[in-house]
Length: 460
Image (cartoon, rainbow, N blue to C red):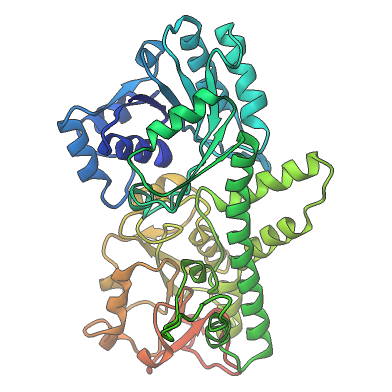
């Protein structure tokens, strides 16, 4: 099947390359010639495990190419997939990129002589595809729904595992406004044997928001419990959550007595809040949509409030333990919002660094993949980015692990562990155990000690 994907971000590029890997003929469209050139050279402009190899193979076999966006590039496509960004502006979804992509596609539909279905892949609030997108398509094409197909096919890709998620999905949600759309999507996903759920476009849009909002709610709930446990004292929230996880409703026990550990449990551990390109903006956008519909979304508002406050928790705990962070040399490990990605959007690290700087700390920061993105995205931060973090360990007063990169496991073993002497280790993602740092003050979220002693401040 001949397909055009408008947009080459995390969703557009991964979707296009994976569809090509399954045998479809795919053209990805973008407005940036530099991005187009890189992609056509087999060099993704985003980091995703396995993407570069898959892209190179698809290009070599002639099933994938990137082009500058134009009406001509849509010629003969059975499906045009809209996979452009939908950022949140002042708590509301911004549809300007979706409108531009829709109008480009509508201009193509005006003269199209072959059947074509327009599929929205971007995350949009319920009621967008069958109203706004339909309106833009009809206005530009001079045609009516039925003359072209229309649908909504949300993505459920986790950054860092996006290629795996697309190639081995748990389901496809196929929101269809016409029978032609259903037939086209069936053909598109014929190579996959997973469950394919047919719904209307509004339901498909709501499934994506419901999915992300529920996961975000779990994260904020556990973080609130962690803060309560720490305030009471003498409780380790990880022990608490291990006990919760053992409930058979979370971890079913098979007939042979073995426990099943579902992936949902990954969202039931404390940390410094959720970030990235999806959870924050999606919860905000759904909250705004609820209010527009006359519903006050109290839980969604609380989820966002807890998450915003959680990013300050690290520095609050450090101040409580030390009395002052002034002139402390702090090494922040991890800038991406999660491991295995270079995405720093809504990363907790930004707020942690800002709070440290406000308190007068001297901040150094490292990430295996995201330093350049952080440098470009956070130009206002007074932080020194270091390409090598190991040489900074001995001279650091405080080491904070914000992103759970496996590289940082080196801290627990020689020779780095031998260099630790009375430093403070703040393990925000519980990558380690307290017993691995016997000469240090080990701190974490949800396990605040009743009494602490710390290395004297340099200005004392």
